[in-house]
Each structure stands twice: as C-alpha cells, then as structure tokens.
Image (cartoon, rainbow, N blue to C red; front, side, top):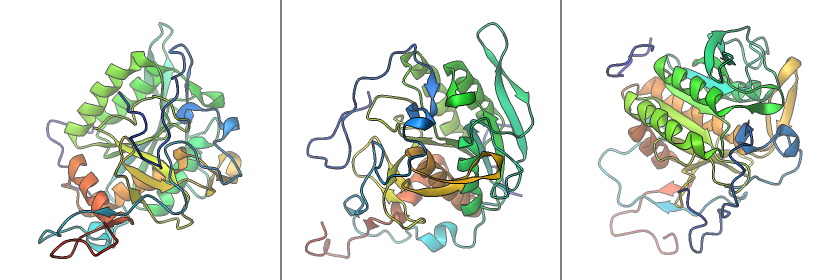
Length: 331
C-alpha cells in the first residue's frame, strides 16, 4: 500500500507565441463563455479521432522540440531507472475525469469506483455513484493508456461529460473538487473549458490540489485558443508530439505547455469493446499521467513540484552539460 504523504487530507493570461518560437501556435479568439464545455475544446467529430497524421495545436513535430541543456549535473540527479525502474504504479490512485469508463473493456481491466457529476435541478451538480459505462468512448481510451503504462495503478472514473463530449462548467468543477477531496494522487484531465467564469474557481481547486500533493495532468486545447485549466502553473500541462516512439516524452522550453506526449495515431480502447487509432492532445495526456503514477509508485514522497522536476530531467530531449560547458553545437 502506498504511503500517503498528504497533510490535512483524508481520502477525502495564457501567453501567445513566444517571439521566434517555431513550435507553438498563437492563441486565437476564445469561444463565447456561453458555449458548452467540450473535450479539449472540440467535439470528437472534429479531430479527436482523426486518422490523419496532422497534430493539434500546442504540439511538436516528429523531430521533436529543441534539446534542452539542464546545466552542470548535480551530485544526485534523476535518471529513468531511478525515477520509475521496476514500478507498475501500484498504490497510486489515478482519477480520470471524462465521459466515463467502460470498465469491462479488456484493455481497461476494471476500475475501483465509478461516479458521475449529475445535475441537482438548481443549476448545480452532485457526485453520484453509477455503473462504469462510457457515453462516448473517450474516457475509456484515456483509461486504457494509463492501464497499459501503469498496470498496477488504481483507476477511478469521474464522469463530467455527456453524450457528444459536452458538459457544463459546474460539472467539471464538481468532479474536480470531489477528486481532490477524495485524495487522488494523479488526476487525468483530457479536456478544458474556455469559459472565463470558470477561471477563478478552477485556479482555486488546482491550487488546493497542488498543496495537497495531488498532480493534475491537463490536456492543452486542440485548437490555439485560451482555455483552462491546462494553462495554470499549478497543473502539469501536456501537448502532443509526432514521434513514433510510444514511450518518449519531451519537456518544453517555451510555456505554457510543459511536456509533450505521444499524441499522433495512438491506439487505445473505445466503447463497446472496440479499439481506435486517434490523434489529439487528449491522448497524449494519459501517457504523462501514467508516467506520474509510475514515479509516485516508487517515490510516494514527491510533491507535484518535485515530480515535474523529475520528469523534466528524464525527458528525451533533456541533457546535462559536461564540466566546462555543453559540447560544441549542442547548446
């Protein structure tokens, strides 16, 4: 059983393109605040299950981002073997906020609990236990990626989306708040909202999670628009890369995206026992969420800040300079 280090907790503007940056696209006008919440900002029919190789916004190409010099190596630095070698994510609780999870899917292998944020009739939502089903397939896809990489982690389904991957801001807030109160170690959030009225409340919950030792792994929008909560410093933000290496992840030198995971032609589970090949930041995000579970399974004492530092040091494009400075041509 993983040792929980949480204190006082019982299971309980986005910037535009940085000058000269070739990797990020500048944000366009945000959607109206009256538009409903959608998965990473888009319905599935407009790119989430794309069979093409085109990547969404906030992504990098097959060549990947530039190499990042981390400076002279400290006496003790993280390596992949130290960070997650031998770990299955056992003892780590991963909560997937999405369209639900089809627990019976063979690529998911069951969930610990399944709940939904349902309307109360007064414009608010409450958390209710429900059968582990998926209204679209999107949550099942994310859960299957987590299961493949971190098979020992426990998965809890928190449904905040309806049919068509639509939902309300209050459903998202209710589900996210509940997951933090329940003591989630990792929260996979492969969705975002452009509603400005959700900004402050999401920030407060994200900060609460951060200080409680819970890492929220949030997908960047699939379009170059301003949305939340992935752009918050308190969460771990994820875009896509086109590298065919399904285990590779990169760190970014140009925020707001911090990490890039496999997001092009990803094979994952889908509803009704099916599988799909999909493209989108949504599917890059559970790769990083699962990696977090592996690290926490081996080092449960790490805070979200320390976890980000470990991932940055072990990213495929990070390197340490030898004494005397970086080799010529690598800076």
